[in-house]
Length: 342
Image (tube, rainbow, N blue to C red; front, side, top):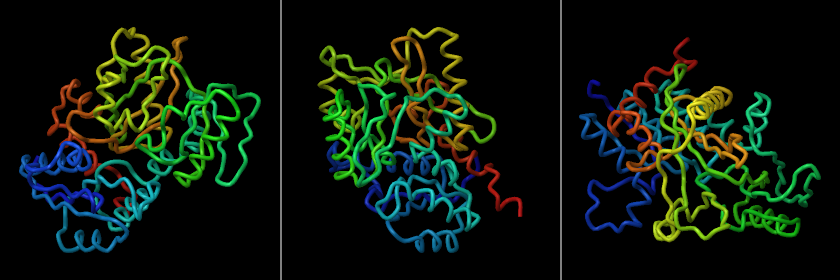
């Protein structure tokens, strides 16, 4: 790949330093993805401009007009503190006729609305846990057709924000209490879905029209007490000490038949297309104790940190970190945005 001008968009609080010297492991974790991407792009020979964004679009416009990047590498996960506003920033990039990496606005909008995404998947006959939504300010009324245990989470927040061990509930009193917690602490509607005991899988995908899937990845709890629900809570995802305590590992899934492996890859491609995704994404699933695959959600623009699930599964598929970023950039440059047709 020729040398490019790459504008890297990220939250203004996550603009990484040039060196990690003097930073604690906890501090590094906050901006690790941004640091890994910026440093890798520089080592690949690109001219890189990290740009912190919070609540104004003018810095993005100014950088595009004055610096004229070949591509914007999009690491933004929110705008003005609102996670579901990320698609508006990508829409702005399209209005500026600026090529960018990752998912298009429509895909971001559909995937981040968990209720709408589940309805679309159900229409396409893709199995997803049965669910209902409790809007802010409404009393919790569980449909009789949906039985316990249930999992309660935000309808729109990402990265397991607000998910704890208490998110799995076994009766109506606990359900109402947890829904209230989501409403009050996260200030979003709550989505309540059937909890599926079993194995948790992730599958990374790259592509616009032609899709490449990576090996199936699994989250395992090797030291968890017997009977403890094995779900990806916020602590499981982000608390290193807690991960060690429970023996949390994410690695290539083992003991899957060729038939089941092919089925999972096919399901995830169908999810990717049904939700209008492009660039790169990760699909989260549960394999029930009866061997049925349930899609939990799709995550466009997943974490790109070195050593995390997406990058590690890509590496096992033969793409080292630089090759993965190179693939993502090429997909962004090739994406057939509407403005290209005018």
